[in-house]
Length: 239
Length: 239
Image 1 (cartoon, one colour):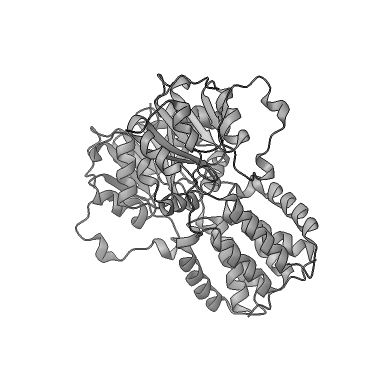
Image 2: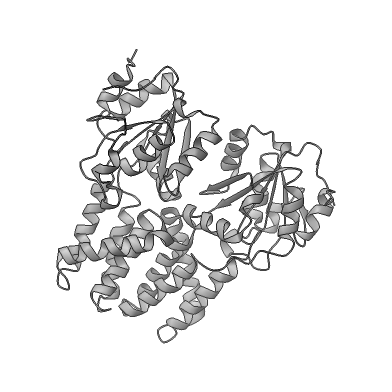
């Protein structure tokens, strides 16, 4: 399974949401509650379809994150009700959106142990996209911050941004390993620049992050069931 | 006037909004249009007072930036109308909020020339707080990006964050100069860590960024009328 050269490895970067801690279920939950709130106006499948389209349309203006998500929920509610949604209902949407900025962080299984061991051997980085303020807050709430020598919050995870990270830290591609749950953001662009990546899928993936199987052709990377398997795979033992 | 040691200077960091380009007037304009939109519900002074309080209350959850500003406008409109603001009015608020994410960038007087000359002598950095995605977009729209070797977008400009910047770039305090329009964010914390700062006031300052005169006691820094005066003050001449 392993195609990794651990001997040359200097820096291991971890995606945050749904790699280190539970995130997407909070967004799914909020979206369901938006559905409940608007159930007298609109059915859930129509809402879901329309909301996703609004999010994607707004992505180039808002970027990723809870505030843009909340603004897109409000827009969707206004559009689908032809403006009949009330001010008080919109306040409820803002209130559930605010919960996305403050939910308690549930660290995923095996993460703390893996970080504890790896931090002794390698430089560790949180490398996440999204809203700067929100992501910093989640790192603080997670209690994992001290394991990471570096934190990089970027607006998009593409080849160019990974290349910029390598440059900034003076790293060769073979010295960098990325670990995350998104094939689109954490694995494919990293492989494309000649660095290494490990995929740890999470139980749910936002539609926007999904990739077609044809994009995986000819790519070499490991998929692990959970962070528990990471130390074995890296052939690193806890002292 | 000059108290600066240019000989030791390695990196000059520039604030972005209202230092490199016009920003705050766009926010003032949007707030006035919010007032027009709600004028049949509420008078402008009440709106201003309430909106500012809402912004400050939400700052710890939203951080700085246009998306949080827009959500706070919506909340204010709902609260001040006791929920009577309509869905269509809220859509108008979102639409004017979106303009804050896409307005054409008006580079301030003297900025381009100063950057062009200084970039040949020093490493230049954009060092701004706010929304990551929005600030990156403004840098791109400004056409000034190529003058800057580094871009740092941070969530708060306090002593700790400046110290982190010095550490990250391996700089001594005397090697770092910060230039910006905010005494609170660009000048005082920089002086407090022993580095140097230049204040270039802008015609309007957001209330949250204002500091009392008593906080300036015993502080040494230069105030310049515009970026035109920066080269003279630094005793740097264009070739």
